[in-house]
Image (cartoon, rainbow, N blue to C red; front, side, top):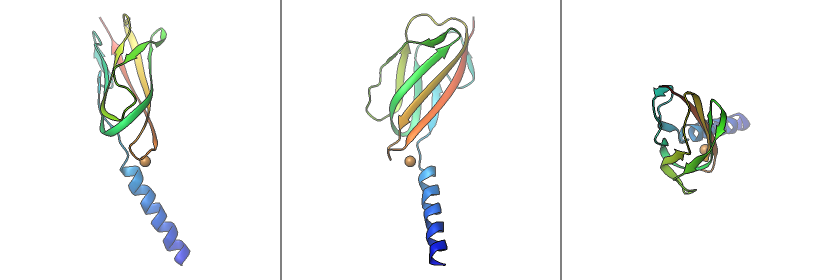
Length: 114
Ligand SMILES: [Cu+2]
């Protein structure tokens, strides 16, 4: 019986930690948006996160971006695309460490159109 209660307590504690994880509040461009130009790629988190990797994949493959945000934990991350962005579908993928040290990841998509 003690063992069952302990297992339940661990399960509840784990669930609480999972709920406390940072998440993406909003992005620029917005997920699913169609835009004509992209001046910056931005992500806002509800808790500071250390963004360890970000990739931008466009219609011609992976593209160069310049990070404006360093490796300090932030609630607002910003990067700039390098060069022209042809029309087509884009995906931003990111990895980060949450404040509690847990690895996080996410992605969002947008379309550049004339
Ligand atoms: Cu965590």
